[in-house]
Image 1 (tube, rainbow, N blue to C red):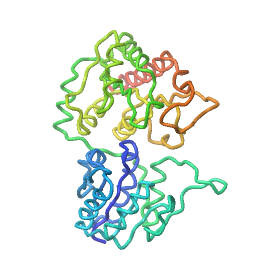
Image 2 (image 1 turned 180 degrees about the vertical axis):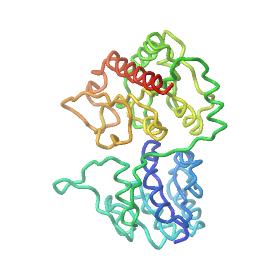
Image 3 (image 1 turned 90 degrees about the vertical axis):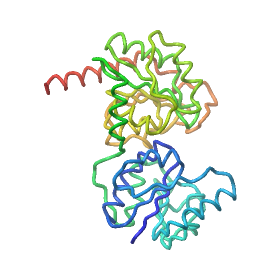
Length: 343
């Protein structure tokens, strides 16, 4: 096998959770060129990983013209095997259009005829059931003889960018990221004024330097946090980029966030997270590699998996700021105590 084409997930968090499976592919086939293809942002997240031979950013979802352009791109790679990580029909179609003689993916979404090796999805009592995504991706590549090395999620950051990022945040206090956005939809958003309250409390009680991490499309959320905060929050260099996000998160002592892509980037860099979770089932994203705490409450309408709440959003509004503040302060104290024992 000379070339493996990995059609990677669309969302940042899913891409991060895909890295153990991608690494397993390289370990099993070290002489094959592993090429990751997908959205530009997804490819950027994987940049710097030594076992990715190259990334192939694909254009937007602009109908038949986009599919035809992707076909030309992917066929030029001459893949021997294509692994389809997304669940979408489009992912399997791109694998077929790539010309890869071997195409591996989950048998779901009416796409089995496009695959040559079909893996049955995880089921409970005959129905497809949620599974931690990193584990699901590893189960997919197991059909190719790939095994998990147990090292968890992995991302890389440019050393020079990492150094310059740390220099932006001088001071003795801990560096805490505040990531109030979520690409999935507004149902995942904890109120902006509560994020501001957390940042203020950590500044006042722990001397923390709080960095506000938001991306394109999250300007309203960013402005709402800034308007509600008593103490100024620091900001990464503009314009926002995936490389900048990785460097900022890698420099943190703690991240406070929604169940979003930033959470899984932090897991990859071994940064503890305080994750505020509402409408999504925890089983999809809670794995053995995470340090920190997931804060959620049980409600009779959840987890609904809906991007927009159709009731009163009580799964998120029912979580008070004091609970998040207490958890964050405890993690910062524990980290300080651990550092004290090492000095």
